Length: 235
Image (cartoon, rainbow, N blue to C red; front, side, top):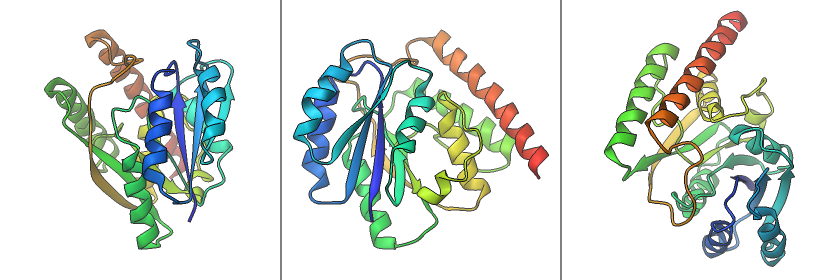
């Protein structure tokens, strides 16, 4: 089985060496293709990728000239992916690339065609957990399906599942869209604990203040209403 894992990078030049090195430590012969997406970075991330990626046979690069959103970068990476299973994780090193390998091993051993494997974050600050639980509760009630820790990483699924997506969002709502769709299609969803740590370098591109959290909530709610309307029309 081949897994193509997308790592969207927006101004993560200091974390790129760390993530490539960590993947090289944990892949250990597994058929995992790591696609780093330079998602419109302005900090020299692309230059770092160009220098380092040739040293790692498992890695390659996709370039997005202008940042159009977190989800857009992932979608461009997925277009270039050719694995039997696809997925993504963050470049900030707050979750260990080893989690991707754990998911790969689970899928390879189960040999099922309908698996959706997703992390479940542990060790986060109280306020972030409170915020996440509140959003999870709302989305679960609104969509009538259990949707907990929606933005947890990694997300891994069959390529055939990806090929059925219809107009996925370009922002952080992509996590919600994909998780909800997996529930809707009655995929076998497996959650496993992942340790969530502090950033070593850089800072979050959205989780910087109460104002940014409220903006995130507003954006997610607007997409939730749009997605529900789409599904009501479809069914």
